Image 1: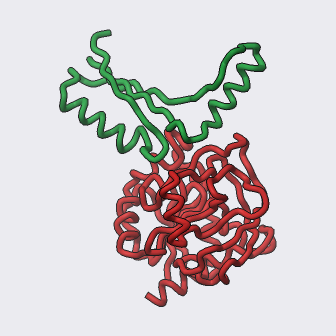
Image 2: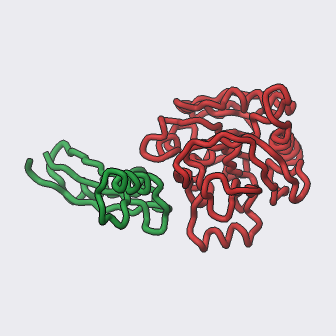
Image 3: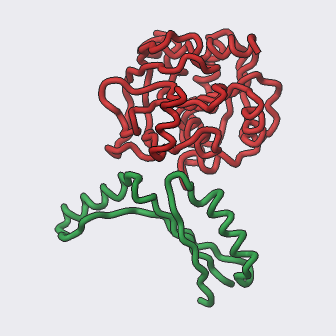
Length: 83
Length: 223
């Protein structure tokens, strides 16, 4: 079974309040030297069989329509074979 | 004249929206997210709440509900659709309206009486307001910050498609103080604050919200 991983991040120009909250906690806990924190989402999609070109294209379509909102988010997609 | 109100799993304000429709003089019809049939309604309200728990993104999963396929099609034909709060998020995710709604910039849930200016009184949902009418209705949201790229914001303002703007302090970080927008045709309106909670003095700070529901009655009769 192959796994397709989709990482979604807010576009750089969109404010990320959650990342800001995490950044604030870094400071309170004494983790210094951190300039910024951005929080994203990772989807691990396990396929029934091999990650053929068609199957990956389908997942890319799912990422475009459901997993990421292109108005505010960018995503990257990669295939992990063998576990 | 029938106004349909959709209930998604996690909708909270569907009952108040039906009540507001009835107070305005319409017959309120409960619609179910899993039923693509609109049961002959003349207009639709997508209510506030946390449909699907706001999982993934607010409105992202509701957008694919069977009822939305019909609503998207009918909206394209001119049927009036009002999305309030979570409903606004669903309209943006459906691409019936441009832009998106993200978490409040201060990261806290907000609940307050919010002054607004109605800047476009030519939509199906705002014709009963005067131009630049100032109203106060309830605002309560977590993901209420309206965002879009600069070109989209310029276009919305240039075409007079900003329906309502926050007055006084910007409560959630929305770009250009935008509280509500409309599509080019003026039949689809998204609004972050809640007019349906402000139709009776017993339970609301004002009755300023009633105009959204009386406006659509006239829009349907006129069409």
